[in-house]
Length: 89
Image (cartoon, rainbow, N blue to C red; front, side, top):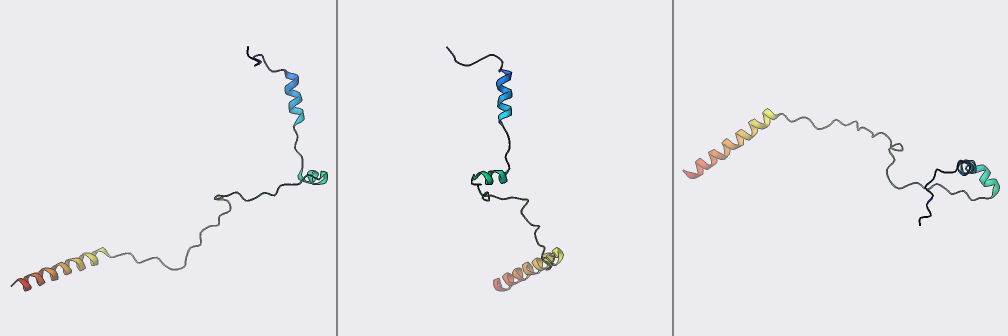
């Protein structure tokens, strides 16, 4: 046989449980002599404690001029081909 009570909960016991709960101020706990636990900082990242990142005053790198880069690559290839032709003759 099961000892589980399948009937509805007794309303008087539910009310008495609700009346037993209360909040107590930490000052009242100190007056009673209950040691108050110090809150230790939890490990991990708290976004509310973070400050905004500081932006540097230095300008970023200059954008690369791709036309000049393409011209430089083309010239170096021409020089390499010219060296191959001159050394092969």
